[in-house]
Length: 431
Image 1: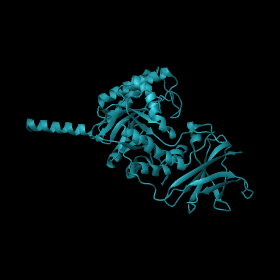
Image 2 (image 1 turned 90 degrees about the vertical axis):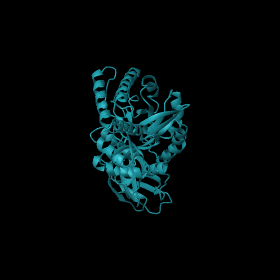
Image 3 (image 1 turned 45 degrees about the vertical axis):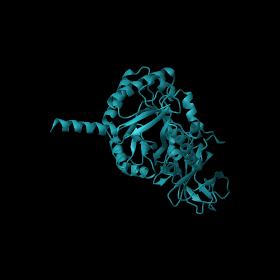
Image 4 (image 1 turned 45 degrees about the horizontal axis):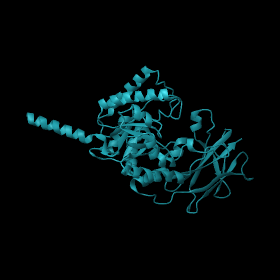
């Protein structure tokens, strides 16, 4: 082989690798752009838990691509990661691949406790595991960027711990960049909890990843500026308001947003906040939470699927990414409440479910409950299916209470002919 040919092949290899790189580019005057394969890239994403492990990844990615999703986000990397990256690449999706950092005290993420101020051996072990993942997946064509941490600043007990974590985060990010200079680093935390710390201690981080829920997203751009952000940002989790922002009803149970509201907050976030901020060169995109089909408290509240059926959030995602609204109006529940009826069977209770006038056929309906006052996290997150039977009219149902005592949330789950599940909630106090 001639020397000239060798040089040409080497040059072509460098060009190909450069074209495959992903980068955050400053376009001047506080404007930024994410570029993949040398072209502008807007993240149209969902967070990803999947529907059945690696065996379902191909179908999962195919379904997501069909509703306009171009990026999925994970919280960590593990044994299933190669299969997910391969499936994503097959269907033209990119992955914001998570690199997990432990939390400093029991909190929303896990009942974990890690001391960043003293556990130097633990920090070193954690960093080694992270760098092992980076080496393993840095050259996969589906990789878009690294999502580093998840709400760790939120769950740290004090400023000393936050400083220690910020230094550990920067040390890891600095090493990641040496191993993989071709993919951006996104530090993920809740709202602006980590912004000032990242700005001060983490020069290797390329952008802020923001987890935020509810209508408060409209205040995010101003909050970022107030926190001193000098970097681009993206919303790494988004959905309807979380329990921390939700008042309690008369029974002491957190109120649930209606499915209409859950749909609307997604479309409003994209149209009123994300798109204008992207055009202004500050925002890189959005991940809607969450692609999962499990029967769980979190999935009923925020999920895109339930079993084999879609949820309203699925259709909201399709609308914002493809501009396609549902082909028919989704079932709308105007009233769901516990009522007193003399004809209820002994030991049963009655509920009333009223649909909007636009609904011409009563869909299939089941009932469940959630006991948020339970003593353990697993029991608080569990959804208990309830036995039910029709009442004397289409809007009256009888349900058998579960073997629990105290305040609980009750769900009505209605499945229409198009296999769309909508939910309505109320509460009661089981005696």
